Image (cartoon, rainbow, N blue to C red; front, side, top):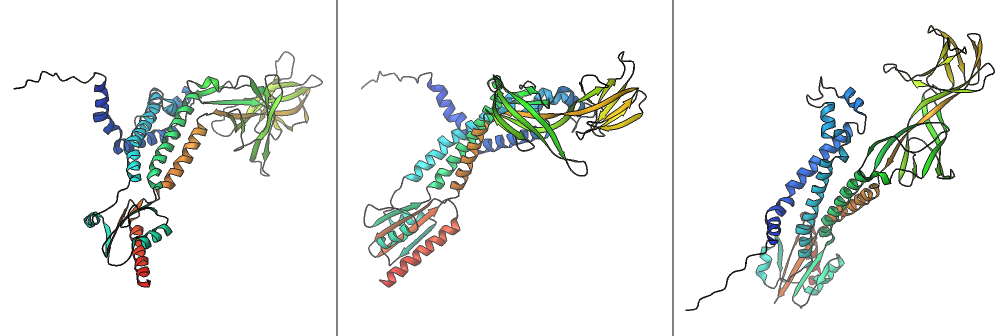
Length: 456
């Protein structure tokens, strides 16, 4: 009797987590249902970020999303700010969803799509007639040759594999197996671009008077790594802002003539911007989004020219009007109010009792309170939205790859086997999509083969 004194060696401790990941976690991560659920959740919160204004002040949300009554019974300004719905695309949980979705797609690519492609590239010959019975589409002919069949298949762009005179394998459309992998790569690239943009991008808003130079300061939303994108060694000058009006007095278009200045004050770029025609410089984009009245330039009698700021007045939603107050006596005991609603140069003058004194245009003078008041100009200001999103090139590249993969996925992967035994020719085939079209193609191949045999 032989006694086995060998002792089994336990698996290293570091292999236990790996086995757990492969057996328990990986099947869940690559589950199609998980990917669909994550995609729907991401889409839902993306819609939320589109509907709810992003990057506004707390006062804005308190005014538009009050607690009583709450929107839909639960959506209040407190919920929005606690959950992060005021900056959805930069919240940790939204970025975590993107990472989890991308991880799921990557795991699916390596565990399913790549093995499927590898299997599709392998081929095997059918050397027994009974193997053709397993195919959904097969035929048995008493005429025809493999040489004729090979020529017909080559004319239909099939790749032929033939090592013996009596067996043949042909396929086409292997690109259709590559398509899903390309689609996954495109989606992962889009997710990476979105994450990179959320981490490094910023959004700012500025209201700049015509003729002023500014640097980006009023940041309303920014990622944790956005400081590198905010301009520090260059500035922008608004050379001129103006508005074109329609014959009826409505706004046709507003423009800003802008120059980019380096640290020495030299112009390095120049562009006239308007709606949908922004200025782009070093990854930062300046959009024309709004306008206002900054100030009014006046002269009283023969005084120097004064430029007085004009403020936007509260009209309870009945249009926009800017106003300022001008003293007409040195002790400021009395004065007049100037109101303007656009940049066409018309200014309304009211006395201390609120009565309309006169209406003048830029360049005109009038007598008020014993002095000559001349309105020289109404100075406008341009409203700019400034964005930087370094992830956009990655996202656009991902979309291009996604579209390419989608087109590739429409190609059918078709396979045909043939076996010649004695005077019998066995032919069979299968495809992964477009079954009806493939059946029609096989019938045409059989008809061509029969025609050639009859001719011979």
